[in-house]
Length: 169
Image (cartoon, rainbow, N blue to C red; front, side):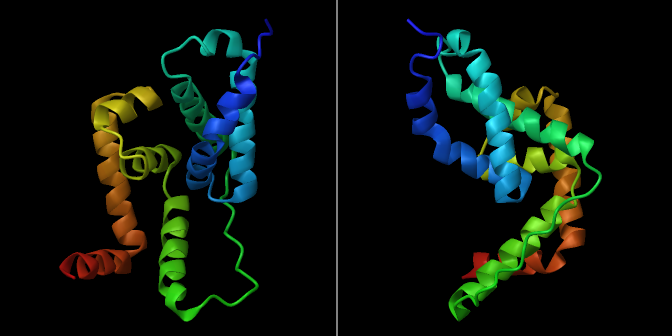
């Protein structure tokens, strides 16, 4: 029995979800690939123990978050998403512009604020779950969420208006 039995199948079953999570945290495909690769390398090194956990995929998610925070601590600047070379169909322009605005605003948050927002609103995690994943208190999650949302309102005030309009429809 190899120490890597079942690892390939495990990775293949969850790579899509992990890639999406890494992209939201990193803001670009190359950086997301680096995050995921770092997390999977750590997982592979400990796979003989991790595979016995009730939820080994939670270990990988946590490793992705920790890799993202480590990367943010080492980096002084954020990459800006590349402008697409091809024109986008008119009905998708509003959505693309909104997404680019949100991405740019998220990139200007602190690493902890961005991680908290991703956990709370992208992954729909509870305060307790987010606190556990990040290794902080529930109060820290709540305060960082409040600070991050306020910062987003300052950085992209027109998004607030768009969400109010969409809610009224």
